[in-house]
Image (cartoon, rainbow, N blue to C red; front, side, top):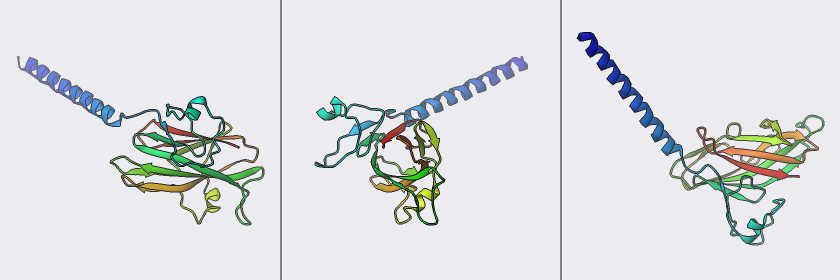
Length: 198
């Protein structure tokens, strides 16, 4: 009789633990939910020059349909975070800081606006992945040395505030397309994808 009570008690404990785990997973899914595809934010400034490559009919009509990749001058928004690729520049380095033979530095300028209710942490090394012609790139401190007078994309953005800065890469001089992925949270699989065509 006592063994049956123990088995019944253990079963109750196991069921309670499983129920608690399920509830925690559901709460985490709801909290981390949000949008999983960024949408384009129309720029309100007129006469702004944008090098965005091909323009679809939807863009020309001014609609803000969801899209997967964004170009120079475009703003993407997801989960109350807006990211704008302001521009990029190439550099062959300086006297004491040059890329490897056959390579150039590419410095990419982003603006990130945090319109959410929580702080947003940004790390040049952890928040960004980049590819040149589909080959993975590493974040380059040497490239950033060419913009030592400018801010790099590292720090925390308070709710309602913005950050502007550069991220640097060393790429083959004959690159034609760069793709940069920004993740707004370590726990998120949601990515802002920006494409630069030379």
